[in-house]
Length: 277
Image 1 (cartoon, rainbow, N blue to C red):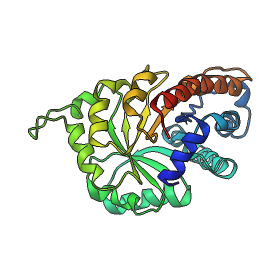
Image 2: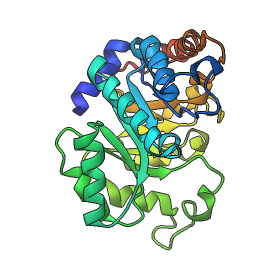
Image 3: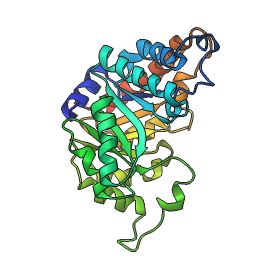
């Protein structure tokens, strides 16, 4: 998916919502657990009722890898279903990989060629050669961790450097932004880090930002959007648990849609106020 495609999708749907399929097998509704593949049927229910109110799905691979071969099959089936039925949506593998070049090449082949994801999240800690294999793929997105929402972000990301008295995350984002372009690289900016979001937007004014943490983690959508949105869009806000686990009954999918719509109403208004075109 190109940047132009993604911007057009945001404008058409009047939303910049990404829904995270963090499908914890222990949390899905009990009536699904008798099925051969509970994770897949849970995901299918969510996707079938929310595809018109979001522009992206983010699959956190950890919740599938933890189930071994069976979980990996669920991941493959979910990705394949979204790609076949709703190909216009951005499909993100939230894998947070990051390794030396030859290993990175295999990860890139896994997620971009074999599973046909549009984007994958990566850690830039090992430097340029660990990211380059992903950037070689046309119309695919590399999403680098910039500043995360977890409490441990202060351990390293918030260290002050001797260079211009900036935080380490600022140096990482500025350096990494030169490896790719706004056409193939995004940055993760945690929703609970809005106090630093302007710093990130100043460094990468034209790149898309993927902002997780709205909902269960308490991120403020209004503030995130005020800072993160550009005149053309440039923002994806992800919500996972607050949408997919909003109800544990047989109507879980309807409840998920209702929660997504609530966010969308805010997003449509914020897009209008920002005069995104």
